[in-house]
Image (tube, rainbow, N blue to C red; front, top):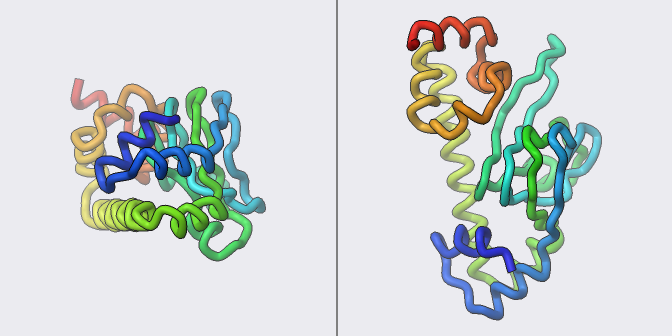
Length: 190
């Protein structure tokens, strides 16, 4: 059994003990070393990853050969390349462990099976997709409408747990500016 995952799910839907067991039987525990890849471009995303411990990032390489981080995943967060899953096409993204991580993999085929066998899980995953959709639009909005410094301040206030765990160059990539600019912002705050 995976109490961390079950506690997360129980925040949104109720499962019977039998449904919990069905879910746990369909999930695979995977361990990744720091800098190890869960997904690389050209490969199909296997499913949705639930972070038990550690920290991961999803990114792509831009035309200017720079890393552009689009998403982080930390404890009790889901992460996946939904485009690869939904369209059954090779990914354009990397998903990489920033720290040694323990991850639960729910393959897409098992998610579909579970949605039929445990219909309330369909509701849970719909809510997770809705929350992800809202977060992505919030990010687009703040990328378009806030200054670099406002983006940094918003992120620092909203996600203080990241500030100590994420390397500065990764945070800068996610927020859309250079590590040097981030250093200047942090120096002003000190």
